[in-house]
Length: 114
Image (cartoon, rainbow, N blue to C red; front, side, top):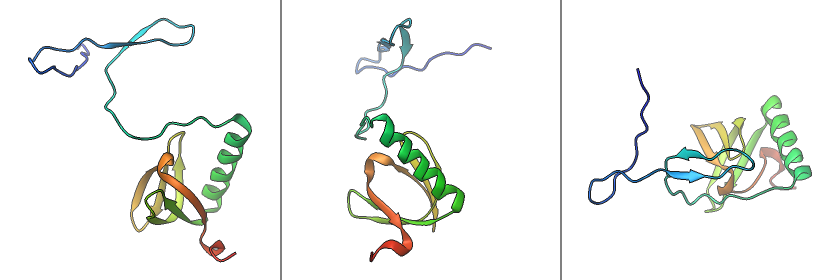
């Protein structure tokens, strides 16, 4: 059994060559071009990154009901189940995967008027 890479094809039906990614101090590797996604990628300095992770972990462990306000004004209500570097999984009416770059702010359900 062999594993083959599936590469996107050009307009003439020919395979496009894979792009080479340059890693810091490592060998170059082959990768297929990522689909373009408008998610904003941002860097957070280490102290605020640790504070963010600590806050999210605390809310997950206590299963705190949260309101997450997105950049477009939509409100999601539910408990944070899981997170990684770029996303949050929120369990409310529905289970929703939210990109962190789409979040404007969040607060605990009871803290809206304070």
